[in-house]
Image 1 (cartoon, rainbow, N blue to C red):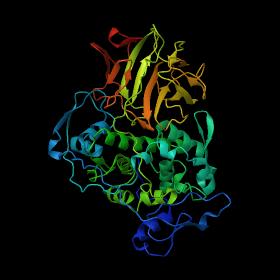
Image 2 (image 1 turned 180 degrees about the vertical axis):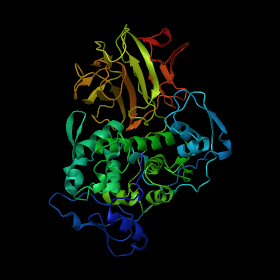
Image 3 (image 1 turned 30 degrees about the vertical axis):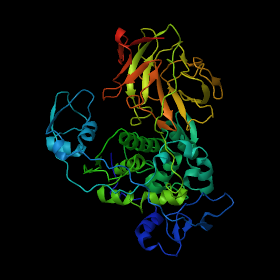
Length: 510
């Protein structure tokens, strides 16, 4: 990975705004990204101009800024609590160890004189460096939780309309993705849907990092790594935006799971989270923590950094009444096992990421009957766990809406992943529990063997299978053990263990 030396947003107007905002809170207009903002820049922002309008004539009359209520303060780990030595376990990587210990990967490299960060041996003993004590991140709240997930607040939003209205570089972009040509708007929509990340947030990140909405052409240094994250294998807008969505999910869901920091920046600095931040803010801080060194990062996540771009494009996200993504007392609806009666399936994957690497551990995996290994043809059927219409069916993924409004971002929704193209259920069909979804396969995402992956969302938020609201499939209740894909299903006195195998201890039948 390479982070550019200048590490700054790619818009001169943005830089000018950030450096002059402190003295621009009087009556003179603030010009930024083709907008004119009058008075205190803390208001409701604007919609994109209509196609017949000139964006340079758009005028924003903001509302007074309202400071959101701080969340409860979390106590970060005490550096003295970090063990002096760590023994490498199966599945460990340098980054995972660093994250777990709250230190930088580079610090571990230096402390142990490791020549190759990609090679660790099981049983190897590493000395853990003591984190450098740094001031906490800003306590300024950037976005509410409802603006991170692709939930109710984003259901009437059209990325295509906004992109066309601004007529910037993103409106003229296209890329070949998974065998088809996608426009910039289609890329944003696909990434938002698959990761369940709010498309407004993704567009604001694109604008902040490269002026993709408002600048007519891409900057010369944005033709390969469009967000400025230079890493082999992440070339192109689709890969860059997918990486960003994954990092946003990482910050969001680890905060939801009780993580208390620290943020690990590219130079290895460990920064405690600011007191009172929320999960949505932790997500944005985490993403930009992968792109900027400490001092630049603090400016980016402060009131006059990324937040100002978001506010100008979409308004103050805290101005409207705040939606609660997960209401108190939330209960899972009754769900059946997702296969036909009398068939013996294998429980092959315990709680793991619903999509990408860093979403909530919302998914469970099941493999069909038979002894074949690898990606093989299967005639077995995956069936609906509940009643409800199919709202998405493409690329190996099927989404079923359980509240019947046809919207996967409101109420409960079920994801069935790795469903073969042949015989796959079509969008619009209203299923009854037990109706056929399709056949397990290797389609849709990374897979080394025929199976399917089942997960839940509520109001756009992935629901962990190892959290306070575990999967309950006709009395089979999921649990994890702290490692992805490990875990169990328990009903009464019977306990099944997840295993990428076919043995009696992971066999399940309805």
